[in-house]
Each structure stands twice: as structure tokens, then as C-alpha cells.
Length: 155
RNA sequence: AUGGCAGGUCGUUCUAUCGUGCCGGCUUUAUAAGCCGGUAAGGAAAGUCCGGACAACACAGAGCAUCCCGCCCCCGGAAUACGGGGGAUACCCUGCGGUAAACGCAAGGUAAUGGAUAGUGUCGCAGAAAAUAACCGUCUGCCGAAAGGCGGAUAAGGGUGAAAACGCGAGUUAAGAGCUCACGUUCCGGCAGGGCAACCUGCAGGAAGGAUAAACCCCGGGAGUUGCAAGACCAAAUAUGCCGUGGCUUGAGGGUGGCUCGCCCGAUCACGGUGGGUAGGUUGCAUCAGAUAAAUGAUAGGAUCCUAUUUUGCAGCAAUGCAGAAUAGCCAGACAGAAUCCGGCUUACAGACCUGCCAUUUUU
RNA sequence: GGCCCGUUCGUCUAGGGGUUAGGACAUCAGGUUUUCAUCCUGGAAACAGGGGUUCGAUUCCCCUACGGGCUA
Image 1 (cartoon, rainbow, N blue to C red):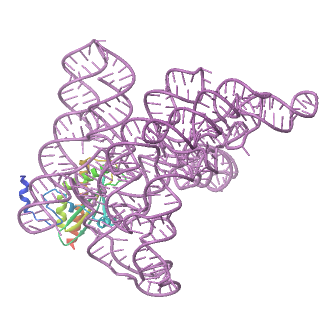
Image 2 (cartoon, rainbow, N blue to C red):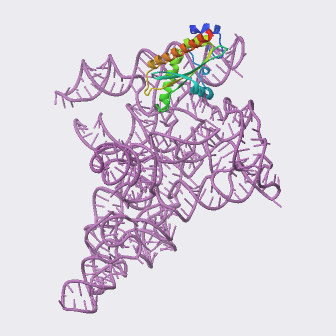
């Protein structure tokens, strides 16, 4: 019996925000559906940190905040499906390991946030480099959400 | 033993921590969360080159067109696909036979291997001529003193070409020629024999015909069309709207995606103008994978394999080989990720192992 | 995912068994002009890769690579 399993039952869950104590990345935390992704491409803001470009939309909602993310690698630069899968898995893992603080701010600000991470480099990079650059984009997103929240509260 | 070629088989693994999809069970506030258990990508999952299952249209019918295939037998297979084994035929190469040539025999290799006497087309350049052959040459008639000119016959020789009108010898002849004959070659139909068959052998007779069908074509065989984005269900929306012209059971139009017929539905019609709405999900989708912006992973450490370097021991004059250890090698380091499923083909591939053949070296 | 089509000078294209692989724009050289542009003359420059059929392949057949289209 692992020791961490004992305190899990006490945590409060919402449907959109699973247990934040665990660094899991469930199916419902992933962005899916043609409409929402098309909306992201049409009217999303973008931020680029060398190998990763982030598209995001943050919209305030009255209920508790929600977060959904998607990961993409263009097939034009990586012809083989194996390479695309590898890079998507690395990005997803980096997001999974470092999402906790972002989730806290989202829940506090009560925004519905969707984000997509696109790998734009031409060569395969190791996990550590992808993780550090993905962290930069996450910090940016976090700052933007906090800024919107303070602007809303000032009103 | 080493190297090369061909074919075949295989194509990592363990531990810890944190995680993912699906299925089952339990608990709670029960399509959610947590826990437990099970399960989870290849030999090509790839290319989409074939075939089948399955689905819709008549449980898919006829004709034309179009497309594909093409030696025989046996085994596997749903199969006229494909694979394996054996054989037939043609060609290539080596050796032997043949004075030489055509050709025959033996070993090996290759073949999308029905038909070129059913017809049509094409065969550039060169060459006289590329399929009703006369440039030089040979023989010969007439004219002429001669040089030569105008004719005729002739496919033996020359040169050109990828290919030149069956091969070779003899006879005949003015000169020659399958014109005739011997030995051969190929083809045609007939008879006899052998073989399950493709086909082979023999006999007598006839013929001598260039190549090309992955040119049109003819013969034989096969294919109905479209494809899981098929199709089914739920939800949402609903306008068969309005105006003009034509049509309305004596059949417009559609199903029907090459055309005609047939079959089915049958006024939900056609053309022009005008003007709105919807387009989300489930299933199809599993028999020990069943995802859907698409799960099967990340990090850390180890083992084994391989490569390189260093080093120790043994063998050897040496080159070097064998055995062991250490270190290093952008993640076991190659090709590569299920998408309805199955069978075949093709292509990509680090390394290991097995089988066969060839070459070299050493020992007996 | 499925079904199709294409690849020819630097670019856009013609050619569908025997060609000196043609044309336009671009480019280079020369001429015209005081100079530049225009114009004239000339040159260089290509059949995606591999195999097969054929005497001969850019063309016909097969495989591979790359590019593009249609399909709810």
C-alpha cells in the first residue's frame, strides 16, 4: 500500500478539475472536438518559445474554472508517425509534470481556458529542453490569466 | 577459420517512482472519484499494388463498351490471386559433338510463356531494297568500230543495318536460285505410338512464312458499381417556401456513378430568379488492442547484444587469433506506430542465428 | 481512412516509340542607342529514380520517391 493513497478520499472533486494532488492527465483534461479547436485557431492568442508555439483562449465563467490542452506536431516537418508520437508524448509529459500551479490560478480566476501546444522545431529535441521551454509558455499563460483576473476585480 | 552471394528464422530485457486507454469487481456523494485485478502496437502495423469478408443499391439481371489475366500437373488456399514442388517449351551462357554453319546432347540461369499463314498499322538513320527486294556484281539480247547505251534474266558474292527473304553441300543452268535432291530447321493439318496434361516421338504429304500483340486486334477466361468518410440510429433543424415558364399516370423525374434495356419508387417534378435553416454525437469497431487532435508513456538505475579504445592471460617468429576485464558510444542505438477485419504482394531494415554455394588460408 | 491524378530547362508548358526534346518568360553574350528600356541576333540550360518489353523508351508495363486533388 503506497502511503499517498490514504489522503485521496478527502479531496474535493469537480468534474472539470480532477484531484490536483496527483500529477495525472486524464482523457477529460485533453482538448477535443472539432468546434473548440477551430475556434482556437480562428481567434486564439499565440505565444512562441523557441520549439513550442502556444495557442490559447481564456474566458471567464461563473462556475469553477476548467482547463483543457492539446498537443500537435506538424506532419510536414516530421514525416514518420513514430517521431510525431514521441514528441507529443514528451510535451504531454512535461505538461503533466508542471500543470499544478497553472490549475491553481485557473481555479482561482474562474476562467475556462483552452490551449494547444504546437511543436515547430525541425529536429527532435530531448525531454529536458522541451520541458524547460514548455514551462516558459506555462508561466506566460499564468501571468495573462492573473492579469485578466485583477482587471476584472478592479471593475 | 575468414570473406562474399542467395534463401530462411528472430528482431531486447529487468527493477523503482510517477502516469495513459479499455474491460471486470468493490466502496462512496454512483455515466463521477478512489482502490484492486486483467489487458494493451509490428515483421513489416508502411506503400495501398491485388483478392476476400462486411455494407448499400434488386441476396445483382441481359447486351455493348471498358479493364485485368494467359504453358501443364500436384499440394496449400475461398480463389482463375499468391506461395511451394515437379515437368514442358523458348532463349542465354559454359562444355562436348558437328570440317564449318544450321543444329544436337549435358549442367546452370532467365521467362506477363495463347495467336505474327484472321486482318490492319509501324520499322527513324544507313542501305539498291525493310516485305508485290536488282545499287555493284554475274549471265545474256539488240545497237555500236570501240568506249558505251537501251532492255531482259538472276537473290551465289559485296557493302548497310538491330533485322536482308530457311542452313549447308551437290545437281541442273547462259548465269543462277528449295528449281530438284541428301542431311538438318521451322510451320500446317492427317495417321500411329507415349504421357493425367503441357507436350514429345515416328510415318507419309504440303509449305518456307522478317520483327513487333507491355501497337490496334483476334482467341480463351474473369470482373455489376461504390466503399466503414459504406451504412444504421439518436439529437438538432425543417421551407414539399415564394415568383415566372413548362410538365402531371398515354409516366416527368429519381434509384443507377460509362451507355442501352430491364427492375423498383412514382409527381416528393424540371429550368431561371429570390430567400432561410442544419451539418453535433453514438454505433459500425472486436474473438486476450480498440484509440478518435487519436491510449500503450516519462524519469532514474542495471543486465545482456553490438561497435570502438585500453589492458591481462594463452597460442604464434610475426601479422594476428581466442578468452577475460575496464571505459565510452545525442534512450538497444535499424526500419518503423494499430484506425473495420483477414489473406497475398511490394518496399525499408542495426544486429544475431541457421542452411546452401563460391573463393582464400591452415591442418590431416 | 478511402479513391484518383501528376512529375519535362530557373518558372509555366508542348511532345504519347526513331526529334538537334519545341515554345514563352527569366538569364548570359553581342548589336542598335550618348546611356537605360524596347527591339534584333546568338548561346547555355530539362525528360523524378530503378528495373522490364523492344533493334531502339521522355513515351508502353512494373516498383519506389515526391507533389497535388476529391470524398463527411
